[in-house]
Amino acid sequence: MKNMKKLVSLLLAVCLMASLAIGASAAEPTTVDVSGGTGTSSVSLSSTSDGTLDGDPAATKMNVVIPTILPIAVGTDGTVTTATDIRITNNSFGAVKVDNVKVEAGTGWKLTAFGSKDSLAKVKVDSNMIGFKLALGGGTEQLTNAENAASQTLIDGAIEGCYMSGSGDQSANSIAISYDAIVSPVSEAVVNASVASVLFVICWDAV
Image 1 (cartoon, rainbow, N blue to C red):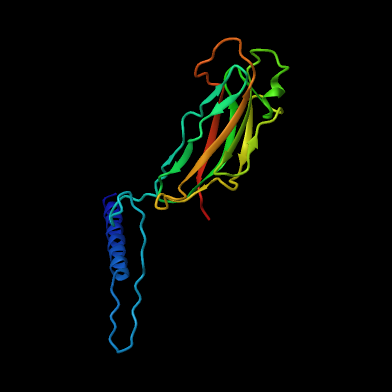
Image 2: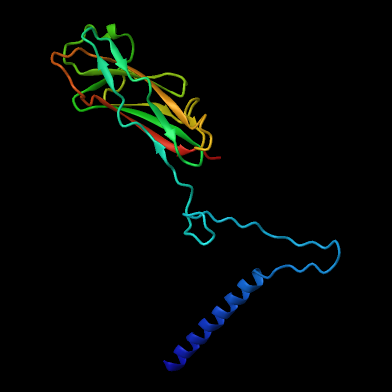
C-alpha cells in the first residue's frame, strides 16, 4: 500500500511538471533573428464579468426594460383610450429582438376578435370580453381572434419592428408598443382591473 501511494504521488508530480512545461512552451515568445523574418501573435479573447483580463468568465449581460402595465380606459359609450408613450428599451450592449408575443385573458375574462366596438353591441353586459390589437416598432398590427378565449400568440418569430440595436445606438435601441382594444359593457365601474396580460419573449439578435 505504501508503495502504491508513492507511485501515485510520483505520477501526479510528473503530470504537474509536464503541464507546466507545456504551458511555458505555449507562452514562449517568437524570436525573429533575420531581416524580414516574421513572428505571429495570437489575439486571445476572454469575456469577463468586469472586463479585466483575469476576471470571472461571463457573457454579455442582457438588460431590456419592458413596461409592467398597458393601461386601457373605456368610456360609457364603449370608446377605448390607450397610452401612446409605451416602449420597450434595450439597455444591453448587444442587439436584441422580441421573438414572441402572447396575450392571455385575465381571471374571469375572455379574449375575442378585435374589431369595431360595435361588434360587442349584442353581447350581454358583464360578459367580460376583450379584443386586443398590438403593433411593435411601427410593424404590422397583430389582432386577437375568436378562436381561443384563454390565450393567443400574436407574434411567433421576430418580424419587422421587433428588432432593437444595442444601447450604443440610441436611435434604434427602443421600439414603441402601439395597442388598442374593444371591451364588452360593464354594469359597474371598474378600476385597474387585470383583464389580460401580454407576455414578451426577448432574445439576442444573434447570427
